[in-house]
Amino acid sequence: MAEDHKNQTNIENKDTLTNRQGHPVTNNQDIRTVGNRGPSTLENYDYIEKISHFDREEVPERIVHARGAGAHGYFETYGTAGDDPVSKYTRARLFQEKGKQTPVFVRFSSVIHGGHSPETLRDPRGFAVKFYTEDGNWDLVGNNLKIFFIRDAIKFPDMIHAFKPDPVTNIQDSERFFDFCSNSPESFHMVTFVYSPWGIPANYRLMQGSGVNTYKWVNNDGEAVLVKYHWEPTQGIKNLTVKEANEIQATNFNHATQDLYDAIEKGDYPEWELYVQIMSDDEHPELDFDPLDDTKIWPEDQFPWLSVGKMVLNKNPENYFTEVEQAAFGTGVLVDGLDFSDDKMLQGRTFSYSDTQRYRVGANYLQLPINAAKKRVATNHEGGQMRYEPENLSGKNPHVNYEPSTLGGLKEAKQIGKEYTPKVEGNLVREPIDRQSNTKQAGETYRMFKDWERDELIANLVGDISECDQRIQDKMVALAEDADEEYGRRLREGLAGTSKMTTGGTSKNPLGNKDSEKAPEEAVKKSHDADPY
View 1 (cartoon, rainbow, N blue to C red):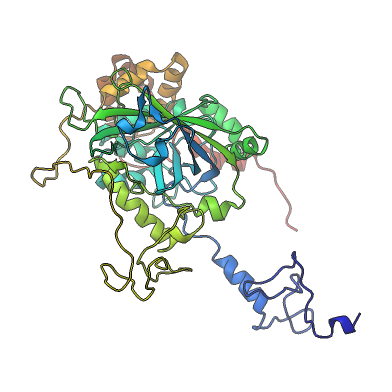
View 2: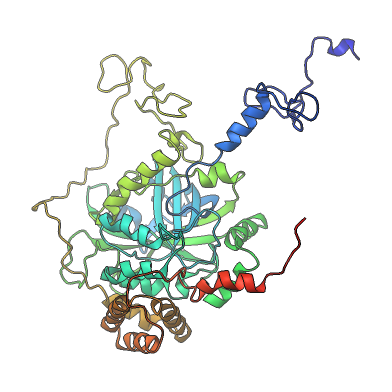
């Protein structure tokens, strides 16, 4: 036996542990020390490689949408938009042929809270879909709710700062939330949804999705229409009250991630139908809102939902970090036949999203398998951290990493479909849109709610707003009164007689958790003494 292994150093099989250099690891239990008690020595290469990688194994957490879960699946097109061939509206190839399937990866998330926060917190939920189409990737990045808090991207950092923890106490503070929202009346429709049971979806499978922003579809003749995207879960929609959410959180703060994983593992594949609303590409003066305003819902009776396909999620990630955490989405990732509208929030998101991924994951994040297109990629990009393959090898001359060239570099594609060329004219200004209608749809939404949803909404709002400065309370009541007489009256009556703060301070209450400031004292009262050991 000794003779057989005379020229071998270590026996390596298919399941042998190695380090990143490919060296077999013969001892993964003990570092190298002077005697078995130590001290250790600096040349512990396997340990140093292992621990130094461990020290760096987290990339910066997403500033928003940090807490997430994901899954793989496919999108199957119907080839139609309602009763019309889809080609009437868009030339995007993934929609054209009935029954055609396109691979997808979907990431669901909460928005404000950190990577290991409970999945029962009051918050919108992210709903981001990456389509690996034959023409390259398309990212449809949205939320479970169909609208947003603000309509201008310049307000986004302030909004997120107000919703995230106080920079001094590091505690999320409902007074900061309502301070921002009461001074941003366009947010009242979203506040109405978020403080209702719709602000706590039961899980990721049982919620709707929406592209939120207005996009455009372009057909082969270069004609464009405005479009909104809606995902409708075929398994139904379920939401939670605060009491129900707290009971779930007490036993499992990963319940939505677990629900998605377990459903796919047992073959109960989640499914959504994709609908679009279509509107002609103009300003629509007959409407009392601007169709590009992402704080508004397009009325379904005027702009019907047209079914265009379905999405099925049938495969769990093999590794959470590699796929879910490193997945990177951007609203600017569109394929031919899809286009941007002039929606101010969409324009701002389109820069911000991709810029965030370059900071968070790295300049070459699109070379990672979860983000890479499932087709040939050929660019003249060079360098950048963590680059692991060149992208200009499709050119006849690898020495040419620029364009144009006579010497055999990459060349431009020939465009078949007619270019869409909208006319843009006007003064460069810094002004809000004309038709703001900040509270009308909030009133319509309030009246649409079931009685128990209205009761929960009022109770949740009273609980948090009662902790706010009186001036903030007055502004929120005025918005509710403007939206709906009953809405305003119930909120005003609910706040009457509650303790009021007269100056700015802190409520020390996370959203939707009245009296949570008592928790530290309760923890001391209810805890049990222990002796030192």
